[in-house]
Length: 143
Image (cartoon, rainbow, N blue to C red; front, top):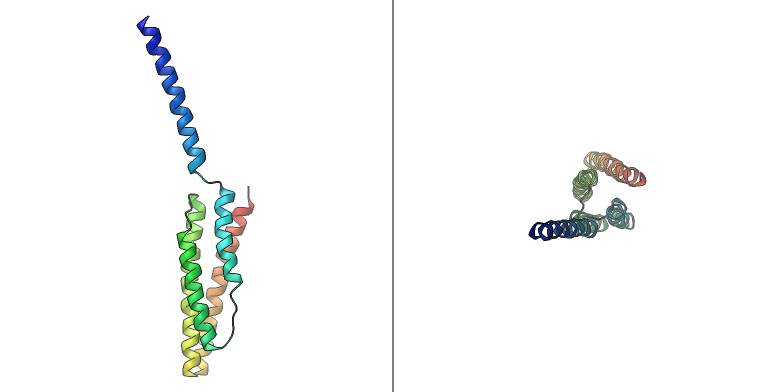
C-alpha cells in the first residue's frame, strides 16, 4: 500500500513540476514579435529627430542620438539573432553620433576639405545604420 501512495505522490509532483516550468517559461519568455516591437519602437524615435546644418542643432542631434543609443542598449532581448542585431545597431548609433560631432567640429573650423571628409564619413555610417535597421525589420517580418 505504501508503494501506491509513493507512486501517486511522484506522479503528482511531476505534474506540478512540469506545470510550474511551463508557466514560468510562458511568463518569462517574451515572443519574438514583442521583442521586435520594443526594438522598432526605439528605432522609430531616431526618425523623429530633426536635422539642420547649424552646428548647435547638430550638437543637439548628437546628444539626442546618445539618448536613443542608451535606450536601445537598455532593451532586454532574449532572441539571439535580435541580440546580435541590437549590438550592431547600438555600435552604429554610437558611430553616427560621433560622426555628427565630427561634422560639427569641422563646420566650426570652416575647413571645406575636412567638412567634406566628415560628411562622407557621416553618409557611410548612416548607410551602415540603415542596413542594420533593415536587418532587424526583415528578421521581424519573418514569423
